[in-house]
Length: 454
Image (spheres, rainbow, N blue to C red):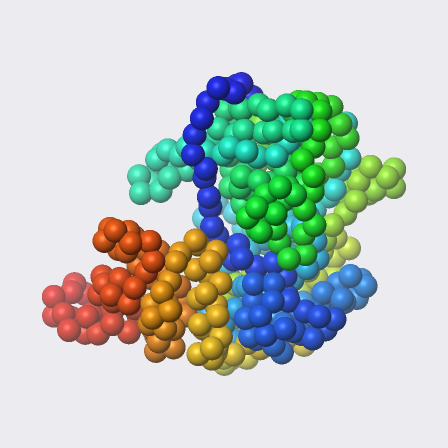
C-alpha cells in the first residue's frame, strides 16, 4: 500500500471547498454574533439552528425534521453544514439533491435509504498498525477521468509525515488521496492513516502550524506533534457509516469489517436482510463497549423535486430507531407536489410539513455581502484592494452573491497575468466582461434568439 519515498521533495497541495470556511453557527449561548463561525448575518436563522443543535444533543428530535426555506444564495446549505460542525467533527454530513433520487439503476427508496445510512456514523475501536504524524509535505497528483476528459480524479498522493523523533515520506494510492481531499487535510494537520485500510483520520491542527499560520478552527484546540516512530501500533478510533458496513456485509458475509475499502466494487442495491444483520452487529458492539453510534445529518437540497412517493418514505423513515437528523431546503413558495396536481407550500405535503421545524432565510444586506466576500477571499488566499472589494460588493448587491464570489478566482488569475498579486477594480471589470451573470446571459439569448435552434 505504501511506497517509502523519503527522499522525495514536492509542492504543497491546497483544496478549498464552497463551505470549507464554515466552522460552526457562531453563537454565544443561543445568541448569534453578526459574524461568527464563518457565517455572516442570518441572525434569526442561526439562533433557530442553535436551538435545533440543543434538541439533537438532548435526544428530542425524534420524528421531526428541519426545513430551511428562502431565496437562492441565502445560506441554507451553509447553516445546515454549520449544524453538523456544531455537533462534532465525526458527525457524518451527507448532501443529496432532490433530483438525484431519479436513477435508472436504483429505486428511489433505495437511494434515500442509502443516503440515510451514510448519515449515521459508527465509532469503532480497533488495535491497528498505523502511520501517524504531522503532515509536513503534501502533493496530490491527478489524472483524467476515464469517462469525462474534462474532469480530473486523484491518482496518487505523496505525503510526508513527521513526529518529534522520525520523518518519513510515502507515495500512496487514489483511495488515500480521496480521503485526504474529502477531509480538506493540509500541511500542518496531525493525521493517522490505517496501514491495512488506508482510512485517514484527522486528529487536529498541530501547535506549531496553528501558531505560525493561525489556521486552526475557532472551536479547535491545537494538538502537539506526536512522538516516537511514524509507523506504530495503537488503538485506532475512527468512524464508519452504516452504509459502509452494509457494503462490507453485502460483498462478503464472512469478510472482515475493512474489506470494503480495498475490496470488490461497491454493491449497488442492498438487501434488507443484510441491513438487519448489520444493525444487530452494531447493537452488539455497542453493548460490548467497542462501538458508539453517531447520528449524523442528511441534508436534502431542492426538496421540492422529490415526488409524493419519496415524501411518503421520508415520513415513515423519520420514525425509524436508526434515523439521522433530516434537514431539507427549498427556494420555492407555493408549487405543485411532484407526481400530483395538488399545490402545497414549498411543494411538500402538508402532513409532512406539520412534522417540520421551518427556518426561513432572507437576502443579505450590502454590509453582509461585503463581509462574506472578505471571508471567502481570505479562505481562497485572494488579495483584494479596498476598491476591488467595493466593486465586488456592488456586483453582489446588483446581481447575486454567488456570482460575486465566483469572480474572485478569475480576477486573481487576471491580476497575476498583469504581474500583480492584489486584485484591482480593473481586474474585476475584465472578469465581468468575460463571465456573464444570469441576467446578462438571458439578455444575450434574447439578442441572438433567431440564431438558436429550437
